[in-house]
Length: 397
Image (cartoon, rainbow, N blue to C red; front, side, top):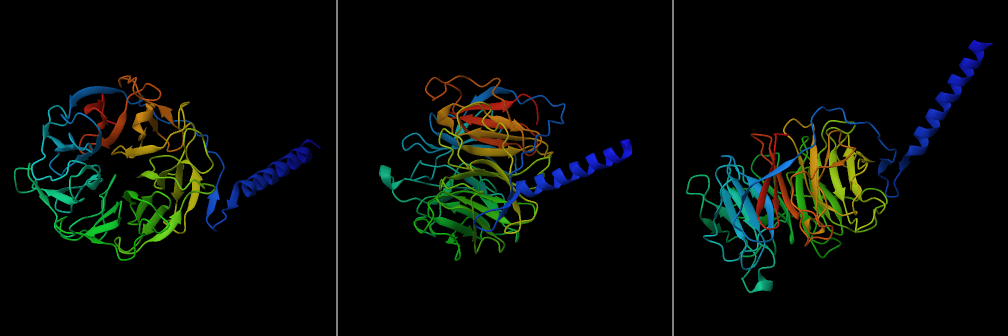
């Protein structure tokens, strides 16, 4: 009798498990599948939370934005301030800095990138608004020259507004792909000239500005847009297909940041922060992971447990993954003063602001974190504050 009852209990449990799987695996309205079950795995790491220490200042007094390393290990930070912006360079991993603005006709800069040969390039935005001429691409003589002289790209004569965050090199090893204010620009000659992707989304036609470009290990390139969400390309950035937003996200918000999810249930998936959170948690916003197949055959999974660490809901503007692919660290829109967050399983998030300063000018009084980057050669993670202060993790990540 005991064995019979046990068998019945086992059957009931199996039936219940199958029913739950059916409930939590649904079909999105646009035909994309997604899984809205919640992963609650705990952290499986002995590593302590990231802590920070100040090591330098860029010399750019405000609106510091993007951190970039070149192939020689030099470090650069951009600023998009019309009178005091530009680019600053460090040759000693962030301790000492020199502003390198020679050659710029406009000092409003945000995202930077590296060409296949290692040339550093940067764009402009809003130059016309401040009577500084047209928006251009520039390239730096950091490969075979002094690394202090910028050259203006003449083709195109204006890019209509450059990249906000990252750019990538396509699978062919020669094409740079950069989502910008005016569409997706491509270069095949180490950033000396650019042309618009013939099959790319055009801002003003069902999308707004392009913000971030990211390449997954399988070679699929993704571009994040405002009022359009994600687009993907499988032909080196020449033609694009809309993937959109995670299920339920009707905000038309920005897609600021992407990464390859670290260790955990979604390791290797595309990790996206989908906005616009807007100070409250809205359906479909936050951290989502897409995979395991590349677009369009993947599935959306929510991977943002405790993503705001008890703070106001606000968009993530940068995600970095450590070289071992065991940790993700993210920063939010800086003017809100929220704490950075980290995850060691790509799903569960915790705050990590120890060592960062308070800033009463931000909404919550925390540090105004604007840019984040990992040094691929050392594993240290860097944050630049709006005022140019450089903070580095106290230990490699």
